[in-house]
Image (tube, rainbow, N blue to C red; front, side, top):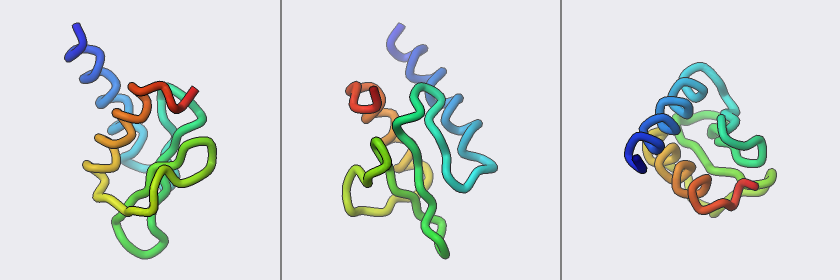
Length: 75
């Protein structure tokens, strides 16, 4: 059941992330991905502030976003 839930969340994130510069989480408006202005790197933002100082590939940023959402930090 947990795998099905995570798969559905991932599908939602990938669908939102495909054509957008700032990607809002499907689960919560308090978390988003911020795209680097010149490169294909992303940062996870929680409540408008960077989650950490690192930039990630889109795949890794979505994985981090999934874990942040699952931990309840986006509420």
